[in-house]
Structure formats: structure tokens, C-alpha cells
Image (tube, rainbow, N blue to C red; front, side, top):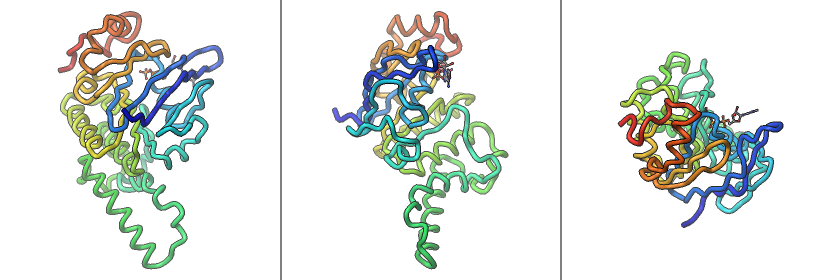
Length: 262
Ligand SMILES: Nc1ncnc2c1ncn2[C@@H]1O[C@H](COP(=O)(O)OP(=O)(O)OP(=O)(O)O)[C@@H](O)[C@H]1O
């Protein structure tokens, strides 16, 4: 197994609060790994740590063997880590195309002083890549619409297209199906699979049991900031500790039963 991402003894404390507490897990190159747990378990904090938005209090984070725990988000993006956000972070008054082109910005870097025809050709190429991605996430019909005009589900797709525009090797998806109906979330599942088929490793945070079970190769469960268990996508729901964590003191909407939402 070749590990693309390795967290080792990672903790994040906010004052006296241990949001993430001695977390270790590995994501295999080419895998889709689920990161699940009840509300407040520490999932988004882990995503923030991996993507450089937070620095660990202790522990190491390795990407393809290199220690990246101290890198800032733009350096991590350049190293191949892209993400979406639980609370959408889009430029609402810009078009879908413009939002995705922002993701292409990294590719422009270092070439921005080119002039004339070369530059125009490069810009045309960037537009073409962005258009293909927008097509891929099913938003061709609204490519020139302002994001503010789009439905919530469509905005989530814009975020995925923008993340993919950076040509990541690791894609972190923070609740990509939040607020979606079953058909929409199934489509996102298909999209995640097709992205993974192209060789992009995925870390998927989601409360949707069906999605996690169907697309993930491996699932890491967090509870109270710690790794509760790690297992295959079907067996994980059979684990009594996982059921207790979800059905106990935390959010009951997340998981009612192993096949909830099917
Ligand atoms: N910046 C912060 N300052 C203080 N506490 C924080 C901060 N960020 C997160 N926390 C706390 O850390 C804990 C873990 O939060 P986190 O958002 O990572 O959980 P989560 O598993 O993503 O939850 P959800 O499923 O509700 O999104 C929570 O108790 C949260 O209140």
C-alpha cells in the first residue's frame, strides 16, 4: 500500500478544548476514504488541518512522504491538495466560469508576464479546461450565470469544479451532499467515483450513510476528536461503538440504521 496522506498523532486544541486528539490514519494513494462521526466529532477540523487552514498543536501530517503540517493553504494547493467547504466559499457575484477559473489561477502562476499571442492562447486553454470541468459537474447550462442565482446543490458542484481546476492529487470534500435530495446526492456519488477513477485520491466527510457506503473504500470514524475505529464501508456500520456514537448523545439525524437513506 502506498500512502498518499498520513496523519500521525495529530491533535488540535482550541484553548482547553481538544477538537482533535491524537488522531492517526492513512489514506492510500488512489482510494476514497470516508471520514465520518457525529456532529462536533472533529471532522472539519481535520480537513482544516490537512488543507493548511489550521496548524496541528502536535503531530505530523505527511503528503506523499513529505511533512506538510506547516504549509499554508496556497502551498498545499500547489502541492496537490484541494478542498471544498462545509459552508460554501464561493464568489457569489461572479459567474460559474469565473469561480472555476480562480481554481485555474495556480496554473497561470509564474507565466503571468507572458505577452501577446502566447498569453492569449494560454488564457484560451485555461477557459477550455474550466469549461470542460463545468460540463463534467453538469453545469454547462449555467456557465455564465452568477453563483448567487444558483440552487444550493448547483453551488456545491461549482465548488467541486473549482477544486478540480487545481488538478489535485488529494481532494478533500467536506459534506458535499449536505442539503441535497437522494437523486442529487447519488449524482454527486457518481461524480466522486469518476474523479477517483482518474487517479485523484479522495477524503470524503459526509453524514450520508448511503453515499459513504457506496463510494468509500475505507472509513475512519471520529468521536470526540479521537479515532473510534477504521473499517470497510459496510462493516463500519455494524460496529457497536459506531452505532452508539451516532445514536447516543450526539446528532440522531446522521445515522438511524446501517442502511438509512437507501
Ligand atoms: N476555531 C474553533 N475554536 C474553538 N472551538 C472549535 C473551533 N473549531 C471547531 N471547534 C470545536 O471543535 C469541535 C469539533 O468541531 P468540528 O467542526 O471539527 O466537528 P465536525 O465533526 O466537523 O462537526 P459537524 O459534523 O457538525 O460539522 C467542536 O466542539 C467545535 O465546536
